[in-house]
Image (cartoon, rainbow, N blue to C red; front, side, top):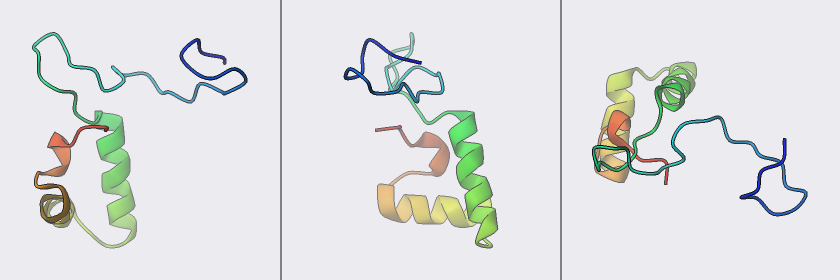
Amino acid sequence: MESQNNHPGERDTSQGGNGGKPDNSGDTARITNKQLNYTVNLGRNIGWNSTDLDRESTKIFGMKMAYLSPK
């Protein structure tokens, strides 16, 4: 599927969502539930639970996983 926002010939790989844009409340966008679930499942594959992931996310990004933005 081609997208007008991509370069000619570049495939649109977006999965929906708001594309990192603020929602109507003016808050900055957060990762989607689908992205969060995917990350949690990756963590499970290496033996981490959601608490472990939140701890690492806080160390690296300064916030828990659910509050990360897609940028």
